[in-house]
Length: 114
Image (cartoon, rainbow, N blue to C red; front, side):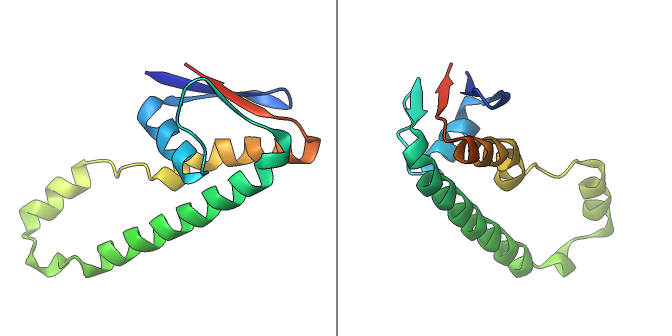
């Protein structure tokens, strides 16, 4: 499933459903589709999203530091170089964060649907 976010002040943003629902959850919003964030609720949603993404980034950083890279053989390292790194939730959230900031400045709502 795809979910598309709409705001009259910016272009539409389409995301995979699981990613969009995670971001909605991090904003403190209901994950139901369709949905809307009223203009008056955008500052709180944006704050929640940015704070929760910062926590996730910190946890991911800590997990990466905790991993013992010395145990990997050179073959494993070559295999790792062949694979693209996963795109983090924080990176996927960037367009939505920009949409929310624009909507906040214009005092308009943000909607989403499938």
